Image 1 (cartoon, rainbow, N blue to C red):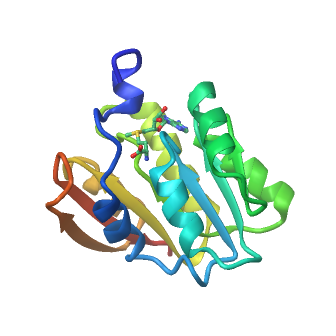
Image 2: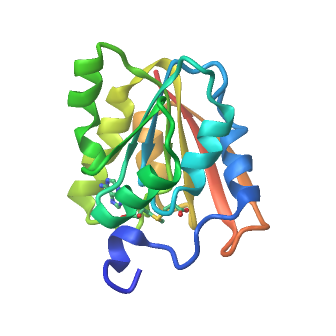
Image 3: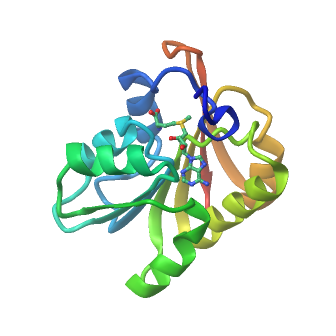
Length: 175
Ligand SMILES: C[S@@+](CC[C@H](N)C(=O)[O-])C[C@H]1O[C@@H](n2cnc3c(N)ncnc32)[C@H](O)[C@@H]1O
């Protein structure tokens, strides 16, 4: 956080309760392909693995090389590939897989990311999803909501008060 405040955007990892609240908003158990934007310390990565079916594929993107390596070491699982690259690259990787994602999970700090990068990431999430798939987003403010609404006509919202700081959760359905 001290080295990269705008791309990390949080002092504490998300609480287990907020992770569960966010993941409850999508059908992880029924998903064939799941993508994570920003593995960080791996709290969502572990939560997603707990819910995934045995045959599912899971791509988790993390730009910080040491965090990516630590998550891959801590969570060895043949369904999971931790990719040390920006999540905007997801389109190319899914094309190689020949499939789109049923669920994309993100805790990226969209409100502090520079605008062009934020736009590319939100576009990449929408393009990555099958129609009816879900983009699950945790944020510490509602600032990004208008940009989500421009790309996703249907959005469910929840508030998770027992996180530090309290979190806004969005489940955006791909058109
Ligand atoms: C707010 S932290 C959340 C991490 C994790 N979900 C947690 O709660 O511990 C955001 C993470 O996203 C990573 N990140 C930022 N921009 C990224 C991008 N474009 N692609 C992939 N990861 C990114 C940061 O390095 C950081 O680890």
